[in-house]
Length: 150
Image (cartoon, rainbow, N blue to C red; front, side, top):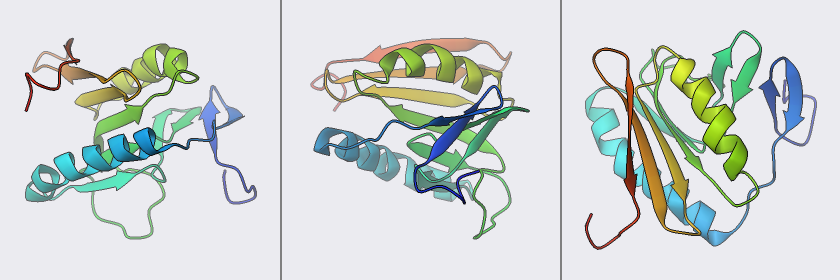
């Protein structure tokens, strides 16, 4: 889908939607922190942690590009799509928060392989973590106090 265009797109209900350009140090620092935090345990489970250029298929007509993906599928150095995404991280900005909170969370929760979804809001220092339990139900935890979670 992105091969013939200079701008990245996500596929939403079968329609290509141009991704909002992301920039800014707070976004990049939050993404890097997520990769650094997730990579060691992912590697111990023979999974790979990638950032922003790895697609996650969210249905027959949906493709998203989370900021961070932990892929526990078979290794494929040329893969453009996560074979078995288990953790996804979205780093939001004020302009993307509504889509991230509703549409993307719903799509990720419908994906059978995804077990953890993190929504990071670096502008207000907030992280919401959604976890799928053994019964397939989702719980949510919110962290917004850096001092309590060091």
